[in-house]
Length: 248
Image (cartoon, rainbow, N blue to C red; front, side):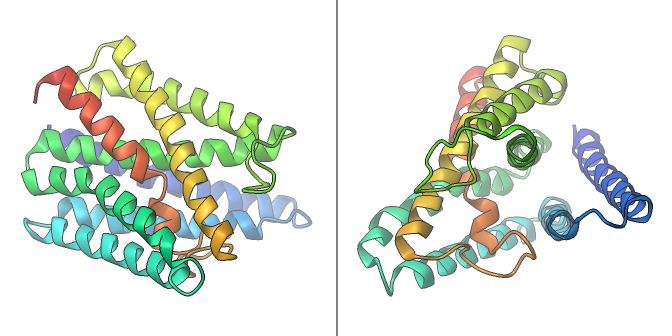
C-alpha cells in the first residue's frame, strides 16, 4: 500500500515533467503563442505538488502539522479578505474552510498507508478536476453558469471536469482504493461536482469582498486558499463516501 502512495506521487511528478517539457517545446516551435498564463499555472502546480509530497512523506507528526499550517494560512487569507469589507461572511467562510479540510488532516494523523493513499488521491483528483475544468472551459466554454459571480465558469467547463474526473476515477480508484467500478464512478462524480461547488462558493466570497484572488503566494493561481477551496467540498464528501463503503 505504501508503494502505491509513492507510485502515485511519482506519477504526478512525471506528468509535470512531461507537461513542462511539452510547453517548452511548444514555445520553441511556436514562439508567437501566448503561454505565460499556462507557465504560471504550471509553476503553481509544481509548488503545490512539492508541498503535498513533503506533507505525505514527512515522518509523523510533521506531515499533519505542515498541513495544519496550510489550513491556518488559508484561514488567515480568508480573514484578511473578508474582515475589512464583509465581516459577517466569516461566520460561514471560516467554519466551512476548516471543517471541510479537517477530514484530510484526520487522514494524515492516522498515519497508515490506506489513509495516506486516500489523502493523496482526493487531493490529486480534485486538482486534476480543476485542470480539466480549466482546459474544457478554455476550449469549448460558451455558456456561462454564473456570469456575475464567476464569469469564467461555463457549463462546458463543468461538464468537462465531471467527465474527466469520472473517467480518471474509473481507471485508477478501483486499484488505489479497492472500490468497485460503480463506486469509482460515484467517487469521480463527487470530485467533479463537489470541486466545482467549493470553487464557486469561494468565488462568491471573493466577489463579495471585491477581490480576484485570496493571495499572491502561488503565481497565476492566487494564494493557498485559492488552491484549497475545491477541497473544502470534495474532502468531506469523498472521505465519508469511502469510509462508508469500506467500513474503515
